[in-house]
Image (cartoon, rainbow, N blue to C red):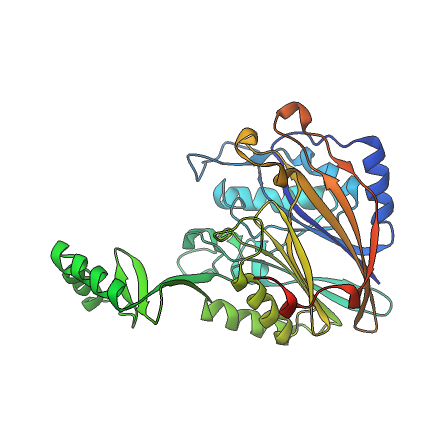
Length: 374
């Protein structure tokens, strides 16, 4: 069985694909059971709707999705930072638009259960479960909720949120506490915690930023315990030969050219949980593919389509993408094929998808997660 993976499709207009590139991409994915990517936009509803953002609000017409089907995609992860740009109406319109173009959305739904459930793909010999999750950071309102009478369910996305907190040394903690005391923040926070408005966390907070005492100053990233437990529960309920998760994150890190260590650690934990392949998007740059045990971590798929509003502000690395085709047999990953792509350039006139030459690598040729440089 072959599975295809692409990066994020930020679509705000009709997609233009070089004819030679189209033929190469279609041939590359021709034998794939499923091809999964990330949709980095919201589809306009039939009637007027509200924007949920004042800037970088991305939306497209349903007809603009047709190019994704033509390229060979079958599934799109909706769980990301632009899925809720048009609110619940946009979520419903996006699901409708995907279905109308012969595509399946994952990681988004009309309620929490549908957003958090996988898409199931059955072949004559295998069952494949495709999951979509968003790691944030985003406000709670973007995540789907179930109905709780008299309130109806809220359409939204599925989260595997990352709780970020600061660790500081003794000197740093003393200084933050001193400022909190002098400005009155400590007393203000205590009053809110006393009435149950804010959680009385074991971590201290400095103007809303949680911090704890440690040997040195560092940024810590922890998976939200409730989201992790929910994913575990869903995994137990869906028996499949292969579980694949498409994860979107916008924490990025201090070096945008490499994947942060917490992403690699999260990938390992997901494989330990039972996921076969972890595919990551968010940072519009290509990052390495690692093997861990018998699983794969595609730590950064980069872009597929990138209709950004800020072409001139990005460096050249964001215009290079990578398509991936993975061959699996008897629960083992045999090899991967890579097809480099060019997703555009620093002006709107360069918004044309082009493709390079295919490279094939056996599974054992990939670096292990412990060999990475992070």
